[in-house]
Image (cartoon, rainbow, N blue to C red; front, side):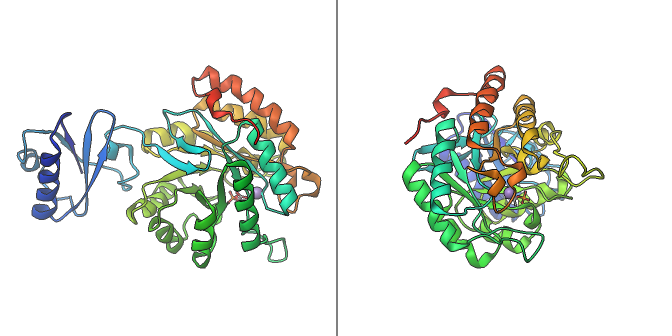
Length: 354
Ligand code: PEP
Ligand code: MN
């Protein structure tokens, strides 16, 4: 249930109403401040609460509404229809993700392989306009015999790339034991598709401060995905970005997954959280990444994740879907046309090389 307060409600009155709601009705109250309204979200057993009785608490209460969805905190209704933004701190400044901001580009290799390649890739993607370097230190591989990532030493290389370029770092966390090491390096912690419903991991990243990039499980429904995000918000971390990376379907002959771009309008109506699209894992083929990235921008994505490798043929993982830095340059050029057309492109977001 949410309580919508009239604009101009005095701060003391907001506090008084919040305390009264918590004390008299035994619910947790979360305040969110939108552009024009202050919303008090009530979490707990609200089924028997009487909306009219709550309304009488204060003349400053405009409306009392029930949130019908099973996911509460992530639902759009919980914010009275407003989108939220996730503001990420990076050495180059704050980068906002969200519906009312320019498209944010995140790029880098599937795996961090060595110092030279990660620094080179970081410089190249930054020069092209990316705001974040994404690279894997801990890799979730189908085969236990496949390259598993260089772990902590790869985190050190990501930190070095951050130092050199000022780019924000995104990297995946697979094991709760690695949380503090990953959180020390990453500006955003990625939870991969295979761990979308690893509830122990979700609770842990929910209980720390770094923003979380939550990939959709390869067979997850949208409700399951949003409930996974709800775990993170329920544990106290409101900064979650949802990343579509393709779902399993019957035809894997030409593309690795089916990139479900219909999630963009669907999520937009269901949740206030920012959206990211990953056409690299979504298609598995470098030649399809550009067209799907354009389509994602046209459909209204807030951000994109693109795999880029200096030499895809030699990549230790996901070479076939990785772009060369040159291909990435021309793709960003093309994307800017679509970004401008939908009013979601800012030349300010393109930073020049360090
Ligand atoms: C990745 O981002 O490199 C990755 C392994 O992605 P996913 O979890 O979507 O498979
Ligand atoms: Mn990959």
